[in-house]
Length: 111
Image 1 (spheres, rainbow, N blue to C red):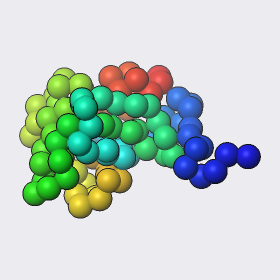
Image 2 (cartoon, rainbow, N blue to C red; image 1 turned 90 degrees about the horizontal axis):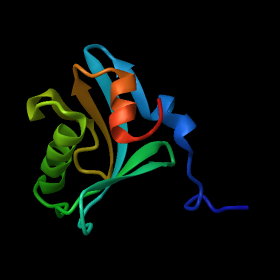
Image 3 (cartoon, rainbow, N blue to C red; image 1 turned 45 degrees about the vertical axis):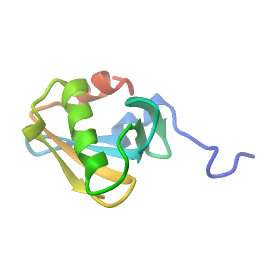
């Protein structure tokens, strides 16, 4: 039996990771700062794992997350803000003007 750290969810978990919100979508993410490159790593434990090169100091990783999402999702940086978890690895990010399907496709977590 796998330990809690080894368990992960498959792409069918996208509905719990990305949810519709008024005017856009809310996305649950788990950030790993100081990575070798910026990338997504699929869904793990109910959140999309995001690796970022920035360190977790003075909001650098949060700014990097917003910039990475902006490029990945094709929206302006001003349309993205962190709803919860500004000082945590687990965050909830709101993206304005995007549908759940568009976000899931851009992030590679299913339809």
